[in-house]
Image (cartoon, rainbow, N blue to C red; front, side):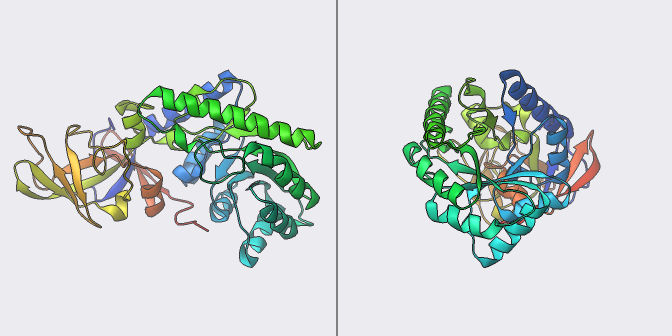
Length: 364
Protein backbone atom coordinates (compact mmCIF):
# COMPACT_ATOMS: atom_id res chain seq x y z
CA UNK A 1 0.00 0.00 0.00
CA UNK A 2 1.62 3.21 -1.15
CA UNK A 3 -0.32 5.64 1.02
CA UNK A 4 1.65 6.84 4.10
CA UNK A 5 0.04 5.84 7.36
CA UNK A 6 -1.51 8.50 9.58
CA UNK A 7 -0.04 9.12 13.00
CA UNK A 8 -2.05 8.47 16.15
CA UNK A 9 -4.08 5.71 14.56
CA UNK A 10 -5.79 3.35 17.02
CA UNK A 11 -4.68 -0.13 16.05
CA UNK A 12 -5.36 -2.67 14.80
CA UNK A 13 -7.38 -1.14 11.97
CA UNK A 14 -8.21 -1.97 8.36
CA UNK A 15 -7.12 0.88 6.12
CA UNK A 16 -8.16 1.44 2.50
CA UNK A 17 -6.33 3.51 -0.12
CA UNK A 18 -9.26 4.96 -2.12
CA UNK A 19 -7.16 5.80 -5.16
CA UNK A 20 -5.89 2.24 -5.53
CA UNK A 21 -9.38 0.92 -4.84
CA UNK A 22 -10.95 3.08 -7.53
CA UNK A 23 -8.23 2.16 -10.00
CA UNK A 24 -8.81 -1.55 -9.39
CA UNK A 25 -12.56 -1.14 -9.84
CA UNK A 26 -12.21 0.90 -13.02
CA UNK A 27 -9.65 -1.42 -14.56
CA UNK A 28 -11.82 -4.50 -14.07
CA UNK A 29 -14.92 -2.72 -15.37
CA UNK A 30 -13.13 -1.46 -18.47
CA UNK A 31 -11.52 -4.83 -19.21
CA UNK A 32 -14.84 -6.65 -18.88
CA UNK A 33 -16.59 -4.18 -21.16
CA UNK A 34 -13.83 -4.32 -23.75
CA UNK A 35 -14.04 -8.12 -23.92
CA UNK A 36 -17.83 -8.20 -24.03
CA UNK A 37 -18.47 -9.64 -20.56
CA UNK A 38 -21.09 -8.46 -18.11
CA UNK A 39 -19.60 -7.88 -14.68
CA UNK A 40 -21.34 -9.01 -11.49
CA UNK A 41 -18.68 -8.59 -8.75
CA UNK A 42 -18.73 -10.78 -5.68
CA UNK A 43 -19.42 -8.50 -2.73
CA UNK A 44 -18.36 -11.02 -0.08
CA UNK A 45 -14.84 -9.63 -0.48
CA UNK A 46 -15.72 -6.10 0.64
CA UNK A 47 -19.22 -6.29 2.24
CA UNK A 48 -19.37 -2.50 2.01
CA UNK A 49 -22.13 -0.24 0.62
CA UNK A 50 -19.72 2.47 -0.57
CA UNK A 51 -17.65 -0.01 -2.55
CA UNK A 52 -20.75 -1.64 -4.02
CA UNK A 53 -21.89 1.80 -5.16
CA UNK A 54 -18.55 2.38 -6.88
CA UNK A 55 -18.82 -0.96 -8.69
CA UNK A 56 -22.36 -0.33 -9.85
CA UNK A 57 -21.55 3.19 -11.02
CA UNK A 58 -18.66 1.71 -13.00
CA UNK A 59 -21.10 -0.45 -14.92
CA UNK A 60 -21.54 -3.66 -12.93
CA UNK A 61 -24.80 -5.47 -13.80
CA UNK A 62 -25.50 -6.19 -10.13
CA UNK A 63 -23.78 -7.91 -7.24
CA UNK A 64 -23.01 -11.51 -6.37
CA UNK A 65 -23.23 -12.50 -2.71
CA UNK A 66 -22.59 -15.68 -0.76
CA UNK A 67 -25.48 -15.72 1.73
CA UNK A 68 -29.06 -14.60 2.24
CA UNK A 69 -27.73 -12.31 4.99
CA UNK A 70 -25.40 -10.54 2.58
CA UNK A 71 -28.25 -10.16 0.10
CA UNK A 72 -30.46 -8.66 2.83
CA UNK A 73 -27.74 -6.21 3.86
CA UNK A 74 -27.16 -4.93 0.33
CA UNK A 75 -30.88 -4.81 -0.44
CA UNK A 76 -31.31 -2.53 2.57
CA UNK A 77 -28.84 -0.02 1.09
CA UNK A 78 -30.58 0.03 -2.27
CA UNK A 79 -28.92 -2.66 -4.37
CA UNK A 80 -31.81 -4.15 -6.34
CA UNK A 81 -30.14 -6.84 -8.51
CA UNK A 82 -28.54 -9.66 -6.52
CA UNK A 83 -27.31 -13.16 -7.27
CA UNK A 84 -26.78 -15.53 -4.33
CA UNK A 85 -23.94 -17.51 -5.91
CA UNK A 86 -24.32 -20.42 -3.54
CA UNK A 87 -26.44 -23.59 -3.45
CA UNK A 88 -28.64 -22.36 -0.60
CA UNK A 89 -30.33 -25.12 1.41
CA UNK A 90 -33.48 -23.58 2.84
CA UNK A 91 -34.79 -24.25 6.32
CA UNK A 92 -38.05 -22.59 7.43
CA UNK A 93 -36.38 -19.34 8.54
CA UNK A 94 -34.24 -18.99 5.42
CA UNK A 95 -37.26 -19.74 3.25
CA UNK A 96 -39.17 -16.83 4.81
CA UNK A 97 -36.20 -14.48 4.44
CA UNK A 98 -35.64 -15.45 0.84
CA UNK A 99 -39.31 -14.94 0.05
CA UNK A 100 -39.15 -11.40 1.45
CA UNK A 101 -36.08 -10.69 -0.66
CA UNK A 102 -37.81 -12.02 -3.75
CA UNK A 103 -40.62 -9.52 -3.17
CA UNK A 104 -38.20 -6.59 -3.00
CA UNK A 105 -35.33 -7.11 -5.47
CA UNK A 106 -34.44 -8.83 -8.72
CA UNK A 107 -33.11 -12.05 -7.23
CA UNK A 108 -31.16 -14.95 -8.69
CA UNK A 109 -30.18 -18.01 -6.67
CA UNK A 110 -27.81 -20.91 -7.29
CA UNK A 111 -28.96 -24.52 -7.09
CA UNK A 112 -27.08 -27.78 -7.63
CA UNK A 113 -29.57 -30.50 -6.71
CA UNK A 114 -33.09 -31.56 -7.54
CA UNK A 115 -34.05 -31.38 -3.87
CA UNK A 116 -32.57 -27.91 -3.46
CA UNK A 117 -34.49 -26.68 -6.49
CA UNK A 118 -37.76 -28.09 -5.15
CA UNK A 119 -37.28 -26.45 -1.73
CA UNK A 120 -36.48 -23.13 -3.40
CA UNK A 121 -39.56 -23.35 -5.61
CA UNK A 122 -41.79 -24.01 -2.59
CA UNK A 123 -40.26 -21.10 -0.69
CA UNK A 124 -40.80 -18.39 -3.32
CA UNK A 125 -44.01 -19.58 -4.97
CA UNK A 126 -46.28 -16.57 -5.49
CA UNK A 127 -43.58 -13.96 -4.80
CA UNK A 128 -43.99 -10.50 -6.32
CA UNK A 129 -41.07 -11.08 -8.66
CA UNK A 130 -40.06 -14.29 -10.39
CA UNK A 131 -36.92 -15.78 -8.86
CA UNK A 132 -34.28 -16.69 -11.40
CA UNK A 133 -32.11 -19.77 -11.01
CA UNK A 134 -28.62 -20.64 -12.17
CA UNK A 135 -27.40 -24.22 -11.99
CA UNK A 136 -23.99 -24.59 -10.34
CA UNK A 137 -21.45 -26.65 -12.28
CA UNK A 138 -18.20 -28.16 -11.01
CA UNK A 139 -15.50 -26.93 -13.39
CA UNK A 140 -12.59 -28.54 -11.54
CA UNK A 141 -12.39 -27.21 -7.99
CA UNK A 142 -14.48 -30.15 -6.70
CA UNK A 143 -16.31 -28.13 -4.10
CA UNK A 144 -19.98 -27.86 -5.06
CA UNK A 145 -21.73 -28.07 -8.40
CA UNK A 146 -22.98 -30.83 -10.67
CA UNK A 147 -21.16 -32.38 -13.58
CA UNK A 148 -22.14 -30.62 -16.83
CA UNK A 149 -24.28 -33.46 -18.14
CA UNK A 150 -26.38 -33.39 -14.94
CA UNK A 151 -27.27 -29.71 -15.27
CA UNK A 152 -30.33 -30.60 -17.34
CA UNK A 153 -31.84 -32.78 -14.63
CA UNK A 154 -31.47 -30.04 -12.01
CA UNK A 155 -32.68 -27.38 -14.42
CA UNK A 156 -35.79 -29.36 -15.26
CA UNK A 157 -36.55 -29.85 -11.56
CA UNK A 158 -36.20 -26.10 -11.02
CA UNK A 159 -38.50 -25.32 -13.94
CA UNK A 160 -41.05 -27.86 -12.71
CA UNK A 161 -40.94 -26.12 -9.32
CA UNK A 162 -42.01 -22.87 -10.97
CA UNK A 163 -38.58 -21.24 -11.07
CA UNK A 164 -37.19 -19.31 -14.02
CA UNK A 165 -34.03 -21.12 -15.11
CA UNK A 166 -31.75 -18.58 -16.80
CA UNK A 167 -28.33 -20.20 -16.92
CA UNK A 168 -25.32 -21.81 -15.29
CA UNK A 169 -22.42 -20.72 -13.10
CA UNK A 170 -19.20 -22.05 -11.60
CA UNK A 171 -16.30 -21.20 -9.32
CA UNK A 172 -12.78 -22.03 -10.60
CA UNK A 173 -11.00 -22.55 -7.29
CA UNK A 174 -8.33 -24.60 -9.05
CA UNK A 175 -7.25 -21.43 -10.87
CA UNK A 176 -5.04 -20.47 -7.97
CA UNK A 177 -1.43 -21.30 -8.80
CA UNK A 178 2.06 -19.86 -9.08
CA UNK A 179 1.97 -19.35 -12.84
CA UNK A 180 -0.42 -18.17 -15.50
CA UNK A 181 -0.70 -21.67 -16.94
CA UNK A 182 -2.80 -22.84 -13.99
CA UNK A 183 -5.09 -19.84 -14.37
CA UNK A 184 -5.41 -20.39 -18.11
CA UNK A 185 -6.19 -24.10 -17.66
CA UNK A 186 -8.90 -23.23 -15.13
CA UNK A 187 -10.41 -20.66 -17.49
CA UNK A 188 -10.52 -23.22 -20.30
CA UNK A 189 -12.12 -25.72 -17.88
CA UNK A 190 -14.77 -23.15 -17.02
CA UNK A 191 -15.54 -22.41 -20.65
CA UNK A 192 -15.80 -26.09 -21.53
CA UNK A 193 -17.94 -27.20 -18.57
CA UNK A 194 -20.21 -24.17 -18.62
CA UNK A 195 -20.71 -24.57 -22.35
CA UNK A 196 -21.64 -28.24 -21.94
CA UNK A 197 -23.99 -27.48 -19.05
CA UNK A 198 -25.67 -24.64 -20.96
CA UNK A 199 -26.24 -26.98 -23.89
CA UNK A 200 -27.78 -29.58 -21.57
CA UNK A 201 -30.33 -26.97 -20.52
CA UNK A 202 -31.01 -25.90 -24.09
CA UNK A 203 -31.57 -29.52 -25.12
CA UNK A 204 -34.49 -29.56 -22.69
CA UNK A 205 -35.92 -26.35 -24.07
CA UNK A 206 -34.75 -24.23 -21.13
CA UNK A 207 -33.56 -20.71 -21.82
CA UNK A 208 -29.92 -19.88 -21.15
CA UNK A 209 -29.34 -16.16 -20.81
CA UNK A 210 -26.49 -16.17 -18.26
CA UNK A 211 -23.30 -18.24 -18.41
CA UNK A 212 -21.36 -17.03 -15.39
CA UNK A 213 -17.82 -17.75 -14.29
CA UNK A 214 -14.63 -16.07 -13.37
CA UNK A 215 -12.66 -15.28 -10.26
CA UNK A 216 -9.90 -12.76 -9.72
CA UNK A 217 -7.13 -15.20 -10.79
CA UNK A 218 -8.86 -16.43 -13.96
CA UNK A 219 -10.61 -13.30 -15.11
CA UNK A 220 -7.73 -12.14 -17.32
CA UNK A 221 -7.53 -15.52 -19.05
CA UNK A 222 -11.03 -15.52 -20.49
CA UNK A 223 -11.77 -15.78 -24.19
CA UNK A 224 -15.05 -14.39 -25.53
CA UNK A 225 -17.40 -17.20 -26.42
CA UNK A 226 -19.62 -19.36 -24.27
CA UNK A 227 -19.24 -17.32 -21.08
CA UNK A 228 -20.94 -13.92 -20.86
CA UNK A 229 -20.68 -12.89 -17.18
CA UNK A 230 -17.77 -12.65 -14.72
CA UNK A 231 -17.90 -12.62 -10.91
CA UNK A 232 -14.49 -11.64 -9.48
CA UNK A 233 -14.38 -10.38 -5.91
CA UNK A 234 -10.92 -9.96 -4.36
CA UNK A 235 -9.72 -7.63 -7.15
CA UNK A 236 -11.13 -4.55 -5.40
CA UNK A 237 -8.49 -4.85 -2.65
CA UNK A 238 -6.19 -7.70 -3.72
CA UNK A 239 -4.25 -9.49 -0.99
CA UNK A 240 -1.05 -11.40 -0.23
CA UNK A 241 -2.26 -14.49 -2.10
CA UNK A 242 -3.00 -12.53 -5.27
CA UNK A 243 0.42 -10.90 -4.96
CA UNK A 244 2.11 -14.28 -4.51
CA UNK A 245 0.47 -15.89 -7.54
CA UNK A 246 1.12 -12.87 -9.74
CA UNK A 247 -2.38 -11.54 -10.43
CA UNK A 248 -1.51 -8.15 -8.95
CA UNK A 249 1.49 -6.02 -8.04
CA UNK A 250 2.35 -4.22 -4.81
CA UNK A 251 0.91 -1.05 -6.34
CA UNK A 252 -2.50 -2.78 -6.62
CA UNK A 253 -2.88 -3.54 -2.89
CA UNK A 254 -5.73 -1.34 -1.66
CA UNK A 255 -6.26 -2.67 1.87
CA UNK A 256 -3.92 -3.28 4.77
CA UNK A 257 -4.29 -4.10 8.42
CA UNK A 258 -2.36 -1.46 10.33
CA UNK A 259 -0.71 -2.60 13.55
CA UNK A 260 1.54 -1.23 16.26
CA UNK A 261 4.88 -2.73 17.27
CA UNK A 262 4.29 -3.77 20.87
CA UNK A 263 7.50 -5.71 21.48
CA UNK A 264 11.02 -5.95 20.07
CA UNK A 265 12.47 -8.99 21.85
CA UNK A 266 15.46 -9.37 19.50
CA UNK A 267 17.14 -7.48 16.64
CA UNK A 268 15.64 -9.90 14.11
CA UNK A 269 12.18 -10.13 15.62
CA UNK A 270 9.27 -7.89 16.54
CA UNK A 271 5.66 -8.37 17.59
CA UNK A 272 2.55 -6.57 16.32
CA UNK A 273 -0.81 -6.02 18.03
CA UNK A 274 -2.69 -7.82 15.27
CA UNK A 275 -3.64 -11.48 15.21
CA UNK A 276 -6.08 -14.03 13.85
CA UNK A 277 -9.06 -12.05 15.16
CA UNK A 278 -8.14 -9.30 12.68
CA UNK A 279 -6.14 -10.99 9.91
CA UNK A 280 -7.91 -14.33 9.86
CA UNK A 281 -5.80 -17.48 9.90
CA UNK A 282 -5.76 -18.40 6.20
CA UNK A 283 -2.61 -20.08 4.96
CA UNK A 284 -1.88 -21.67 1.62
CA UNK A 285 1.00 -23.12 -0.34
CA UNK A 286 1.26 -19.87 -2.30
CA UNK A 287 2.20 -17.58 0.59
CA UNK A 288 4.97 -17.48 3.17
CA UNK A 289 3.80 -16.70 6.66
CA UNK A 290 0.59 -15.03 7.80
CA UNK A 291 0.66 -11.88 5.66
CA UNK A 292 2.81 -9.57 3.57
CA UNK A 293 4.53 -6.49 5.04
CA UNK A 294 5.09 -3.81 2.36
CA UNK A 295 7.58 -1.93 4.55
CA UNK A 296 9.54 -5.14 5.16
CA UNK A 297 8.94 -7.27 2.05
CA UNK A 298 11.50 -9.93 3.02
CA UNK A 299 10.12 -10.36 6.53
CA UNK A 300 7.90 -13.29 7.53
CA UNK A 301 5.06 -13.41 10.04
CA UNK A 302 6.10 -16.70 11.60
CA UNK A 303 3.56 -16.87 14.41
CA UNK A 304 -0.03 -15.72 14.72
CA UNK A 305 -2.12 -15.76 17.88
CA UNK A 306 -5.47 -14.09 18.52
CA UNK A 307 -3.86 -10.70 19.23
CA UNK A 308 -0.17 -11.17 18.39
CA UNK A 309 1.80 -11.45 15.18
CA UNK A 310 5.48 -12.39 15.51
CA UNK A 311 7.60 -11.11 12.63
CA UNK A 312 11.02 -12.49 11.73
CA UNK A 313 13.42 -10.26 9.80
CA UNK A 314 16.22 -11.42 7.49
CA UNK A 315 19.73 -11.11 8.90
CA UNK A 316 21.00 -7.56 8.66
CA UNK A 317 17.58 -5.94 8.14
CA UNK A 318 16.83 -3.04 10.43
CA UNK A 319 13.46 -3.45 12.13
CA UNK A 320 10.92 -0.92 13.36
CA UNK A 321 11.05 0.82 16.72
CA UNK A 322 8.72 0.02 19.58
CA UNK A 323 5.47 1.91 19.01
CA UNK A 324 5.88 2.17 15.23
CA UNK A 325 3.01 1.55 12.85
CA UNK A 326 3.39 -1.36 10.42
CA UNK A 327 1.06 -2.33 7.57
CA UNK A 328 0.15 -5.98 6.99
CA UNK A 329 -1.53 -7.22 3.81
CA UNK A 330 -3.74 -10.19 4.77
CA UNK A 331 -3.30 -13.51 3.01
CA UNK A 332 -7.02 -13.64 2.17
CA UNK A 333 -8.75 -10.29 2.41
CA UNK A 334 -12.35 -11.56 2.69
CA UNK A 335 -11.94 -12.85 6.24
CA UNK A 336 -10.48 -9.67 7.81
CA UNK A 337 -13.23 -7.58 6.24
CA UNK A 338 -15.87 -9.90 7.68
CA UNK A 339 -14.28 -9.49 11.12
CA UNK A 340 -14.14 -5.67 11.02
CA UNK A 341 -16.75 -3.10 11.98
CA UNK A 342 -15.40 -0.42 9.67
CA UNK A 343 -12.82 0.41 7.03
CA UNK A 344 -10.74 3.58 7.46
CA UNK A 345 -10.23 5.49 4.22
CA UNK A 346 -6.82 7.17 4.23
CA UNK A 347 -5.28 9.69 1.84
CA UNK A 348 -2.11 11.71 2.45
CA UNK A 349 -1.78 10.58 6.08
CA UNK A 350 -5.34 11.64 6.88
CA UNK A 351 -8.38 9.53 7.68
CA UNK A 352 -10.84 11.07 5.22
CA UNK A 353 -13.77 8.71 5.78
CA UNK A 354 -14.98 5.68 7.71
CA UNK A 355 -17.03 3.06 5.91
CA UNK A 356 -19.17 0.63 7.85
CA UNK A 357 -18.81 -3.00 6.83
CA UNK A 358 -22.46 -3.21 5.77
CA UNK A 359 -22.71 -7.01 5.68
CA UNK A 360 -20.34 -7.74 8.56
CA UNK A 361 -21.00 -11.20 9.99
CA UNK A 362 -23.90 -11.83 7.58
CA UNK A 363 -22.97 -15.48 7.30
CA UNK A 364 -26.42 -17.13 7.15
